[in-house]
Image 1 (cartoon, one colour):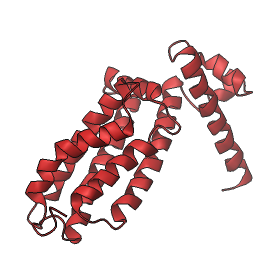
Image 2 (cartoon, one colour; image 1 turned 180 degrees about the vertical axis):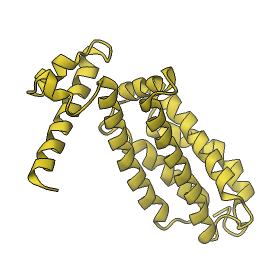
Image 3 (cartoon, helix red, strand yellow; image 1 turned 30 degrees about the horizontal axis):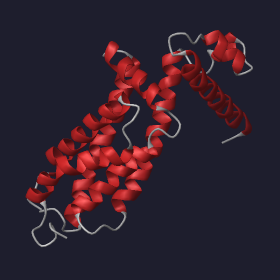
Image 4 (cartoon, one colour; image 1 turned 180 degrees about the horizontal axis):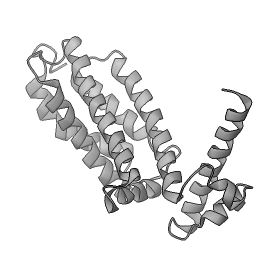
Length: 209
């Protein structure tokens, strides 16, 4: 990356950081583009060289965080585990401890609501793409567990992976709705809900280990 590209990336990051602070301080609806630009030492006209709207900033924030989550989750999936249930437990903790490091729950609530307000918007389509990638990652998790002989070979990886993701996603919504739930709380709930699944699909000689 050349100097010009690095400067542009640094400016975009500064805008995201300032906007995120303002979303939390002033509220998403009350935050004006002009004020974000001023806090970022830019003119409003220059701001639009980087982002088209507040929603575009928010999407960039959650997209960047999701990329980090996906990378960390891939490392978790490929790490050694004693059985499929333990591996999934570690994966769930990775999802919920890596998320929210740069985008707080309050902004995730807005992101989810924005994705539903206008299903045909670019924001909604890109948000759905992130969910699809996470769902595919859970499908890969099942395949890796099959290769490790923790999950039976006859188990169809796609529906099981999607089922596991849908459960995680449901608990993700519950998590961002609450200000008191912890990652450990979610870990316990997902573990309890998924235990019968792993009892059914795990290889018998490792299911109870």
